[in-house]
Image 1 (cartoon, rainbow, N blue to C red):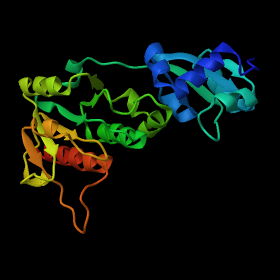
Image 2 (cartoon, one colour):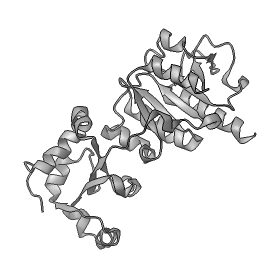
Image 3 (tube, helix red, strand yellow):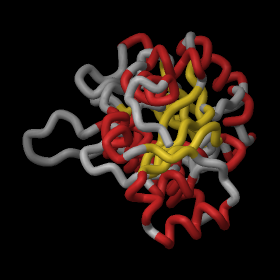
Image 4 (spheres, rainbow, N blue to C red):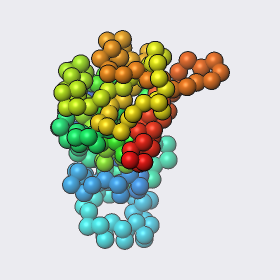
Length: 261
């Protein structure tokens, strides 16, 4: 049993929870809680830790025995120290980061993508992954400046979709948009200058929706690279919607149109 917070394994967990640099260098991240643990593909699991209290439950012991997963027992106070949550559930794991090539996000005429420019809120990014899975996206493209997908808050917000939604982090957004155009993907920018509403456009082909930073929206040079501007109707005195909400509306409109083909 691990009983000291100075244990190197515990220090690694703390670093992975707190520092994006550590997550990048180790190409790993931390998941907590029984639901997220069960969602994790076995081939991505690197190390598993359970608290004394978790292990004291006979049902949990039975689950661990049946799963055949190797684990390390950790004292309750040390587990609470390394946990990123206020009420730890008693099980966490270090997980290898999944990775995809750009080409894996493309599925010919069935391609449906989100392209995210500098999204900063972990909840928004996690919600887009979760909603994207539900709406049948083939992938999500993110700029390097987008909030870290593997930060604890983002991981929790994905509710497991982080394992099932292909993604690609681009170092060159203009180049990536050019590659999408070459692949026959039509790009749409949600923009106040859009002349048509989102439900007036044909979204049944290979499509990608460009979503900008929560505070500033899309950069002008990014929006100008889109094939088509579109807009979402807003009553009252609103000027914009939450980024995840706007993305959800567009993703599900594309899903609706394709469902009726």
